[in-house]
Image 1: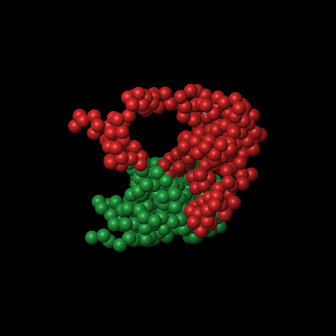
Image 2 (image 1 turned 90 degrees about the horizontal axis):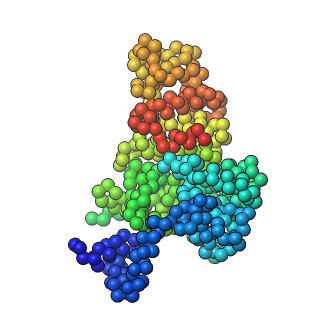
Length: 197
Length: 248
Ligand SMILES: [Zn+2]
Ligand SMILES: [Zn+2]
C-alpha cells in the first residue's frame, strides 16, 4: 500500500481526463524524468494552493496582486470584460484580440441553487466602474437563461453610470452549419438578445 | 438485460457535479416523474449534451437503462426556451420558485403527467408575464403545484370545523393546518383581507396565461404569497432557496 508509484498514480488518476492506465504511465514517466523536473512540478503544484489568490481589482486568480492583466500598463483601462470564471478569461486572452481589463464573477445567477445577485461581487464591479470612469463594460457570460439573466443584472447595477454596457454576440460557431448549432445558442441568437440597450 | 432507451420530455431541476468529469442531474420528466440521471462528461464539455443541460428550458431526454435508481442520460435536446425569464429577475425568480417547489413536493419515480403539464404551462406564462403580474402568476402556479401534490390549501371554509368563511370578512390563515381557521377554532398567524381571498379564487379560476385579468392588486397578491410561503416553509421544514429572489 505504501508503494510510492502506486500512490502517485492513484493521485494522478483523479485528474480530469486521466484514466488509471495513463496515470500509471505518467508516474513511470516522472520516475524516469530528470530529477529537477519532478521537483519543480511538485513545487508548482504546492504553490498554486499556497499562493494563488483572487486579484483585489478584478478577482482573477493570481499569485501577484494586482494580477498580470490589471498590472500591465499597456492594457486598455477604459474597458472591462465581465466573465463568469477564470477559464473564460483565459479563453478570451487566447484570442489575442482583447486588450482591456476583466471582472471575474466566479459564478452565474442560479436561483434554483439560491445563488443571487449579492453572491456575484457586483458591488465591487460598480465601485470600479465608478472610480475609474470606465467607458465600456462587455458582458461575456454564456448564452443560457442564467447567463443572460446575469448580463441583465450587470446592466442593471450600472444603469445610472455613464458607461456603455454591451453583450458579446452569441450565435452559430464560425464555419459551423446552422442545423448543427446547439438549440439554446440558436434560440438566443434568433431572439436577438445580444443587444444591450 | 439491457432495456431499450426511453425518450421523454423533461425539466432540469438540479445539477450537481459528480467526480472529475460527470454531473448528476435531477429531471422532472413527463413519463417517469422525478428521476436522477448520470450525465457522463457533462462537466468537461458543455457541448457534450448539445448545450441543452440547462434549467428553465423544456428538454427532450433519452434515458438508458439504470442501476440503483440512477439512469444514464443520453442524447438531450432543447425543445423550448423561455427568453422572458432571462430578462427579469422577477420572472426568473418566480420560475425558480415553481420549479423548486415542484422538485421538493413530488416523490421520486412516480409519473405525474398533470404536474408536468402544469410546469409546461407555468414557464411560458411567467416568461410572457408583465412584471406587475409575475407575482400573481407565480402565486396561482404555486397553489396548483401544491394542490396536485395533495396539499389543497383551504380558503373558503375553516380547515378545522369546515364552517364557511363569512363573505366580506377578514380571515386568519394557519400554515400548520393548511388553510384558514375560524375564530372559534383558534384562527391563525396570517391575516388575509376578504379581497385577498376573493382575488385568490379569481386567480385560480383563470388559466395561468391569463391571471392578469383577475385584476388582483399587489398588496393582496403579497398577502396570498405570504400564506403560501408560510405553508411551504412549514411543510418542507425550510424556505425555498429561490424564495430570496422575490425581494430583489
Ligand atoms: Zn486583476
Ligand atoms: Zn372552525
